[in-house]
Image (cartoon, rainbow, N blue to C red; front, side, top):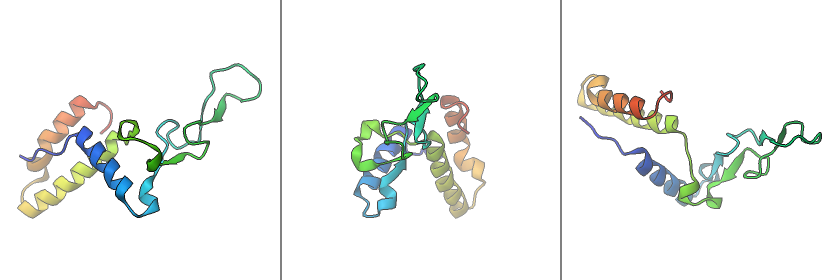
Length: 119
């Protein structure tokens, strides 16, 4: 059975791969604070913000450059991690000529236990 890279290791690898990329599209990521919306709920009771204000993290853009972060601030989705691992496991199962569950069953069970509601 294959043991995939851990989420933490994947985050670090993805972060440094994106930072090293020459392609600008690889460096722009969805803002992790506002989830790409560009606005967050305002907790004040003033009449001016209408319950939402521009996100300070991305200046209301919904995305930020990875060059502005350090690895501890980078928070890609756990679903993205699971999708990437699952995709690799599908390729491995095809290459080995075995059932997909034989390759990834343990990973899916453990991931679901550890990250409820993600997949």
